[in-house]
Length: 229
Image 1 (tube, rainbow, N blue to C red):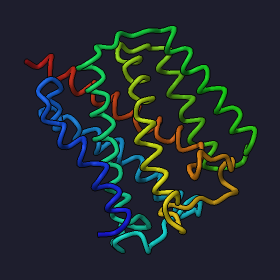
Image 2 (image 1 turned 90 degrees about the horizontal axis):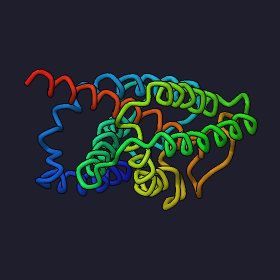
Image 3 (image 1 turned 180 degrees about the vertical axis):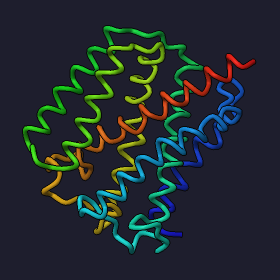
Image 4 (image 1 turned 90 degrees about the vertical axis):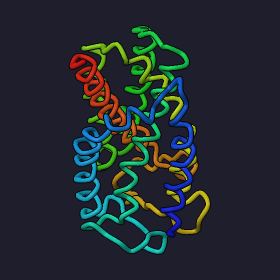
C-alpha cells in the first residue's frame, strides 16, 4: 500500500470502529452519505482535476499506488469519501452527545473571524487561483448560511472546529510534515504562502467548502427520510 493509502486507512479506522456506538448510531446513517458523495465529492473532484491540470497543485507519484483517473491518483479520489465520512461522524457525535443549540451570536463571531482571515489571504495573494477560489467560495457559502441560519449551523461550526485537530494531522502528513517530498505539493504562485507548519492556510477554507456541502446535503437527506416515515 502507498504512503497516501496508509494515511487514509488509519484516519478511517477510528471513525469506522466508533460508528457502531449506540448513542450515535452512525453506521445506520451511512446510506445518507451516498447522495452527498455523488454530488459534493463529484464537484470537488472536477475542481481537483482542473487545478491539477493547471499546475496549481500536484501529487508526488512515489507516495501513490500509480493508479490514476485523469490526473488524480486513486488515493485522492478515496480522500473525498474518507474525509467526509470522518467529518460527518464528528458532526453526528457533537449532536448526539452535546445536543448543540443554534447560537446566532457564536455563529457571527466565528464567521467574522473567518471573513477577516480570508480577506488577509486575498490581500496577500490577490491573483492566486487557490486563494481566490477557496476563499471566495467560502465567503459565498458563509453569507448564505448567515442569511438562512439553518438550525444545524452552530453544530456545524463546533464540528468544523473539532475537525481541525485530525485535519492538521492528516493534511500535515500529506503536505510533507513527515516526509522529504510531500504527497501533495502546491504552486507557490497560486496561494498566499502562509502555512500552518506545512499546510497552506487556504486548506482551512477548502475543507470548510467541502464540509458545508456535505452537512447541508446530509441534513437535507435526513429531513426527507424523516418526513417520509
